[in-house]
Length: 114
Length: 114
Image 1: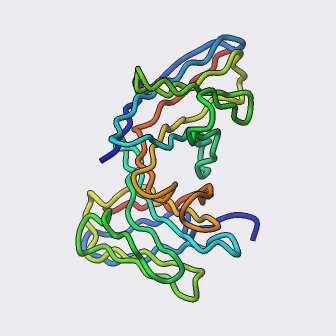
Image 2: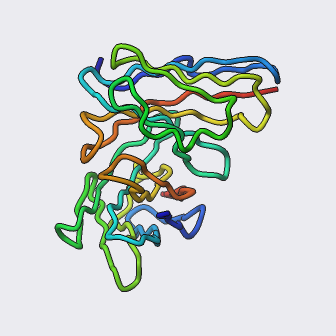
């Protein structure tokens, strides 16, 4: 079965600093990988997805992620953090046909200080 | 509607009682998914529907959990004889069709079992 591991349950950055949220995956087949964001009391929103087209994936709100097969990683980055980026971020891998059954990591809460 | 809606938003129940959680998917979405978000556990896949049938029930944790979908639209997740470990946020998502379309998530139902 596929799985993902998110390193760090909490990440703190200052406004304007680089954001780096780590995700490593385990998959026996070429994976479909996703990053979702969850704001308080809201559902999850898709930030970006990797579907084997390009290794550097650009998403919404200035986020991007790079698929590195050699490192089995799919880390999420943003060059300059904004206060509004404070939220919980989930990495996920598809465990089945297409995007049907998503297996999520335990999440990383991003804290942004002024 | 504009998005996936879930009701109730919060549910407090006593151990041993049955509860029903409702999900209204985005109009026209044929695929529907249930996930459970427990503290420290991330999100767990529970079940997915394509139309009114459930090809994958593999994530339902016990036979106390069941789900149905009628008319290819509304879905109900039922938990019988609730236990304290059932306390979690239950998230519903829908997509246009199951294979390669983004899942849109609702805000969730927070279930507390006393």
